[in-house]
Length: 315
Image (cartoon, rainbow, N blue to C red; front, side):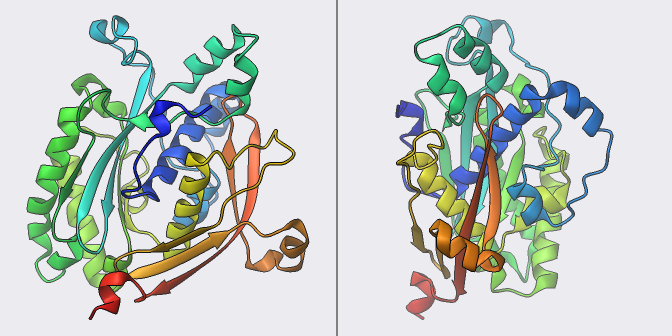
């Protein structure tokens, strides 16, 4: 099954992955709510943000379903969750608003359907655009690294992006909608102090002027991701969109991923079982959850080449 919601174009392809992780995290929460109520009182043991994300520890508190009267009469809006992601690339920043049906609702409906229900339960949540018919993404140039020497002006760059997100996400669902700014190679090329200043100012600005959720803290929601994590995100995005995550299919295989961005290149693939055993120390583990809570584990080889992007090659 390839629902229309998966027909998301190739722009900011890797960013689809963070939403896949987030949606499966929702599924994990709703599938094991009793266990998680106990676990939520315990500290998260994984402090590295990359490892935390790949283990579905997103630091996000699941809010109750906040449907209003309008939602209850609109089949598309009913039980819908949202997330906002700013892909802060080297040449510009693009805000993308994604949505999906609450996995608890999807699970309940699937259990009523003996024909199609099993496939829904064993699959991943369906990620869709944030708007049923309108725009769901907006780009602002140049990249945020352009503000490295004038970090306070990064707010003028963020304002139109966040204002656009507000036009897509219903007001009553914004407090339950997480926002992430994920910067890539353009930001990796500037020094760490400049990175920290830009991200801190950006996060504080969004916290003060918008009601979107940053439950996991600025360090998790607004950050420069490593080239390795960018590669993993790209690999996960391609396999989600190409139905590569078919754990119930004995003949299923995942797809490799090669991405040449503006300032770096990433390569990621899942090796054969034999090669995975021989090179286990060189692989990155990640896991997803199906709608029914079943765990999918993968080990991926990923490498990155900073400075080997299309724009950098032209310099």
